[in-house]
Length: 474
Image (cartoon, rainbow, N blue to C red; front, side, top):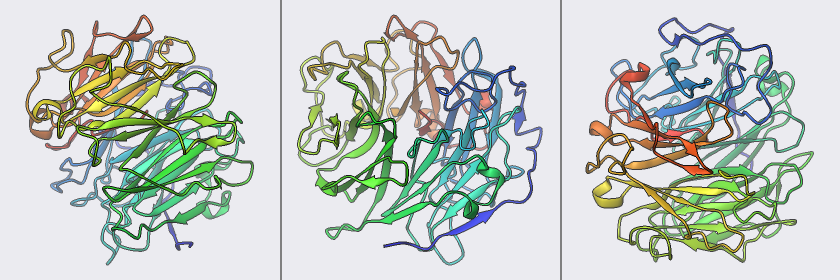
């Protein structure tokens, strides 16, 4: 079934106001390396995107905003940042109650100009009589960082579609341009990058794909997407999971030179999982689907499941599960822990096996914690696991009920030293103002020496109770 779409454009290119653009330096003489997917100003350093979707903007509760903090030789530079919301110059629409601008983000070089571009989801956006169809806004990278125009939005026609709840980026057709997967409710859309990129209307770009799925058992709550290469063919693949509580529908797409192709036999029901990351966990060269199961029935306290990739695609018949009762994993499984609420994966020690950061936001009265699992060729993922909380020596802050340390997790290398850092969202900090904790990579793992913290006030964010750090770009 194909759902009709409306594509709207902002006006001509408009520079952001000085209040929104602070000290973004000009790029070096080279464009961003291919591997730096979130280098918005082309200086060779990865930048960090932080969502604050429940922030009050212009007096509108939960209008939301996004902060972009730029990388440098010394790491993330708090003085070099941008703030975007729907009242920013050049951004389409207006800040409205409940829009939740910044609920999700994804980055990649959509037009191949050497500067990463940014997608921002607003799943609560209303359009006319339609309630919460959601929109996605496109910002273009350039020498001075991101600019608010020209921008486009993908808009659903019906209520409760919640487009923009989840976004992912990759090169699905292997043409050298970043493509974006956009999910919300039971709707999934792909936009393909091209040399024209944002300079031309979306109707003139390569064809986009739209798919819709329905769960007969219960209404769709939301859906998530994750991107990565599972069959080692050079094309980025996409996992799309529709969530309805106890049982969800997983659809897997294989990248190809034409369009994404649904893997044969891929529409399967699974027990309450949320596909969040694809990475090679066991070092066989194939990407694996890492899924959080934070509150699924039958898994006390939550778990993470990993389905292996193969030359033919994702293996649906086999999966490995890790939880707090797994040997080597610190703590114990308890109701409400939410183990797997967020996940991120990256090879930290160069052995070809990705480590997994697992957010456990409900741990200990929602103080929260993050567990770092080591990649393993034998899938013994609990061996050598580490745990971080705000009571861990060197981690900024203190354990407080409701902080939700680990609400979001991401890996980033903002100083380009090839030692990825761990970025942790603490969305409930200070009565839901939120914060982000930065833990540095060291010795092939994550340490606490030189840890830092980003706060809404420190980056010039507007409003209070924004759940700053509720979403992070990986």
